[in-house]
Amino acid sequence: MIQQRYISASGKTGVIHRAVPAPFTSALIVFVLISWSVSAAPAGEKQDRVNAVAQIRSVLRAQQDAWNRGGIDAFMNGYAHSRSTIFVSEDTVRRGWETVRARYRKKYSDRAKMGLLTFSDLEITTLSSDAAVALGRWKLKRAQDQPHGRFTLIFRRLPEGWRIVHDHTSAAK
Image (cartoon, rainbow, N blue to C red; front, side, top):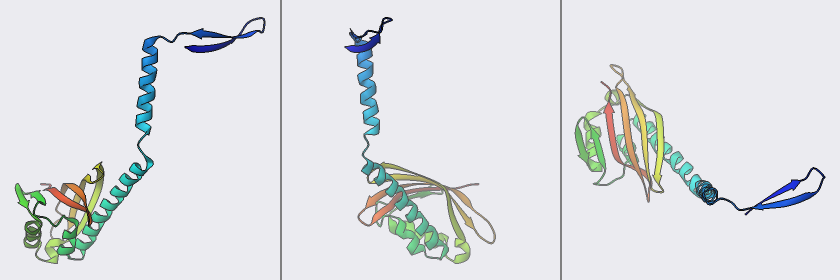
């Protein structure tokens, strides 16, 4: 029932009672439930996502800084130290933290080959409380060239913090 107040031309007030049509009632209930569920995400959950994004940015910043100091081992701290860690590039899949580290050490055997690394255009999306994906650009500034490209990283929240478990990196041609 809908109650509608009115004032007559003579100044009298009253209330009219009307039945609400069933489709309107159903639509109203659906609207209220959807509105409630959309706004019902707990503030704590939103803050957790903000914190996760900040922590992942911190991991990437630490990797960039370590690289620019010539520290491949410190750079590798951003990866999960696991045999299931995956790195994909150059049409090759490498499995395991040790294998990934060996690839970096071989390909970037001295500071000149390492150059200065910059990550940019980061887009980090949390997938759950313990998983996220990061999309971005990488660029090396070296004396003879400036290779660059894109990466997609899957992060997992581990006891030691957010770590890369899957890295797919490509170089621009």
